[in-house]
Length: 389
Length: 139
Image (cartoon, rainbow over all chains, first blue to last red; front, side, top):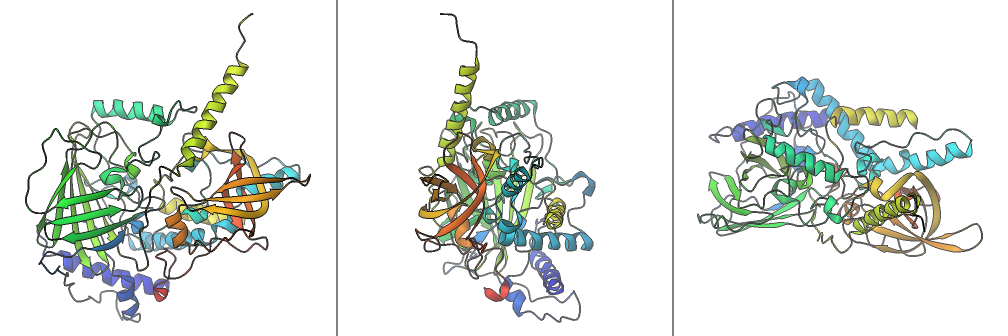
């Protein structure tokens, strides 16, 4: 099976490179994979790894636009570092050995999802140790002392890649795959934000991100892969493309009729998006964003808050029946000292559906976290020396 | 188990070196890792709500009284892709929950491991749900 996966991934990569060839100006390093069904039907006993598939004929809508409609997910890039680890330098793709290792990791993560509940009993381990009179295992440590990453995530929560990405990072430009230096102004905003997020006794709901509060994940945060909920649905009509995101349910209605952006006085969380077609690629430029709130990072909160001058340019190119190559260029001179770009494939997975994600009403975590913080306040008050009567 | 966990961790290390895990809220702001618990009880209802589903559970105490606990589960969309649906956990079902209690002392817990009393997994994958674990032949 492993060998079979490797074979179809290799042929798919070559097919994708061929398909991407005629696209002028495309510098993506995204390695598109063929859809699972096509892979399954492909000759598993292919004599070489270099068997190429016929060039993909991108479908068109009845009115002649490239058809990128459907439900997609960025799951396959979950686990690919956002910034490239420095030891890779300017190498954007993994070596064959590294790909094999990542394939193993993908298999293990699938096992974690399926069996993590059984193999992942740290709470019981603590109790068992106490019953034996042994020192309990150290509680899991978090990065900040809070955050879900400070404790094991239940296996059944997670969603993971179905295929091993060949990329060394999600960021593909600059060539070292790392974020450009921040401006001093942005660094100060990041420091202030981190102080707020990491406060051990949060004063208010405002300590949490717009994502935590079920308000929005922003444009970038809605597609960058995270632990779960990485789906998006694209629907087209003549002159419009609509994108609905799975987690926190933002929707973008993107006109492709050549109209200009709205007045710069009009600002919103998801900004003003206008699109056009370049060959078979949908290009979407988004401006008019509200500054100093969300970030261009996971869940709209990873990194410094962006400025109101942020311009995002996204490119959606269908390279196979079940794969769209996605790119996003980030241009915000008040925040980053240079432009930068992420690129990864989004894939159609049979059976993957989006359901409503209205989450404010049921966001019990916010209530629970704040009640905990107020309890901490009360403890401090009762422990403080009482004024003399 | 330890060996397996280690292998798993090593695999994740390779793949996820620079990837923090973000879910919809802060675990340690809500739950207390120094309050581990194992609860065995009977499901009274399940809230299919975002961002996380909650399982309500009647747990019989040593003195014969009954306490209703709330257990946090995954996001509904994710649970559905695990093959878990509205009819998977009808009221009256007996389950065992391992997890940690809420920091504020309420009868709420994070359900890190949820099984039937015989150890059978609750969150079992099924084909054709779009789950990462769906095998191509099942699609």
